[in-house]
Image 1 (tube, rainbow over the protein chains, first blue to last red):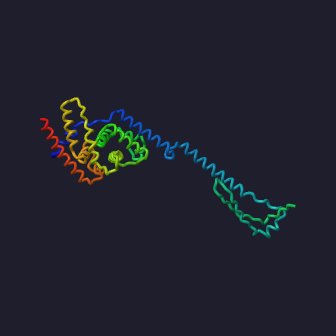
Image 2: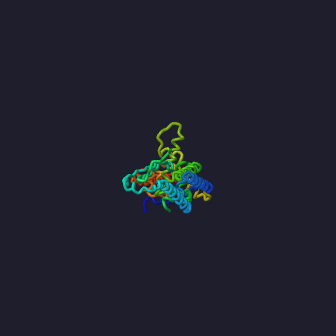
Image 3: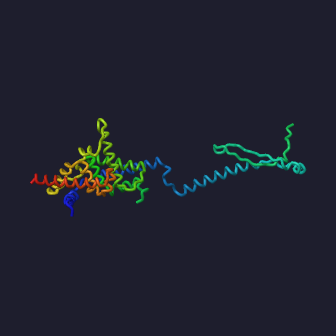
Amino acid sequence: MSANDDIENLLAETPTRTMPDDDRRRISDAIRAADGGRQRRRWWSRTIPAWQAAAACLAVCLITWSAARLRDGLSDHRPPPMPNAADKNEQAKDLTAFVSIDRPLFGRRHRSAYRTSIANWQPINTN
Amino acid sequence: MSRHDRTRGSRWADFLDENHPRLTAYALALTGNMDDARDLIQDVLVRLVEQARTVRDEVPFVMRCLRNLAIDRRRAARTRPTHTGVDDLAACGAAAFIDTNLTDPARRASADRVKQALECLPSDRREVIVLKIYANLTFRDIATILDRPIGTVTSTYARGLDELRAIYIRELKHVC
C-alpha cells in the first residue's frame, strides 16, 4: 500500500456532480439531429435498398444496349448489290472504302468506323 | 462496436450515455459551471458527428477535444489575444465537479474539504488528478490528452497527491 492510497481513496469516494437527465437528453437529441442533417447532406453515403441498386443497374444496361443497337443499326445501311454486276465485282473486288461515322452520343463524340466494299457502287443519276 | 459505427449519431448518443459521468466531471473542471460544461460536451459530440470522424480510442479523443475547445473558448473570450494554456483554466475550473449538496453533514463537510483542497492545487496537477480519478483514465491516455510524456504525467500526479494530502490535513487541523 503506497502513501498515496489513502488520499486516492478519499478522492474516489467523494461524490461528483452528474449531468441532469434533461441536459443529457437535449445533447442526445442534438447529436441525432446533427446526424440526420449530415446524412441528408451526404446522400451518396447513405445505404440504398437492394431493389434500388438492381433497378439502377438495369437502367444502365438498357441504355447501353439501346445505344449499341442504334450504332450497329446505322452501320447496316449499305447499298444493295446491283443486278448484273458480277463481272464488275470480279474486276473491282479490291475497291474498298473506309467509312467513318462521327456523331454525338450522350453528349460525347462517338466514332464508329467500318470497311466496306464499293465494287458494286454506281454513280447516282441525278438527271 | 466498430469504428465505422461511431460515425453515426445514435452511436455517439450511446457513447454519451455510457460515459457522461467522466465527461461531465472533466468538462466541469474545464469550465467551472454546468451550463458551459453541457455546451462544451454537446459541441464536441455534434462536431464529431458532423465530421463523421472515425475514432479508435473514443474516450481519450473526446477528452482531448473537450480540452482544446475549452482553451479555444477562453482565448476567444479574452479582449486581446494572448497565449492561453491550462493555467488559465485554473481560475474558472477549480473543483466544480465535486458534489457538495449532500444531506449527510459529515459527508458534506468532507466533500467541502476535498473541494477546497483541489481548488488550492496548481491547475496542471489538479487536471491530472481529475483525469486519473474522476475520468478513470490510464496514465498513457492522460499523456495523450495533455500531450506530455508519460513520466511527466505520473510524477505530476504523485506530486499532486502529496500536495493535496498536505492541504487536506492542514484544513482538517484548522477546522478542529
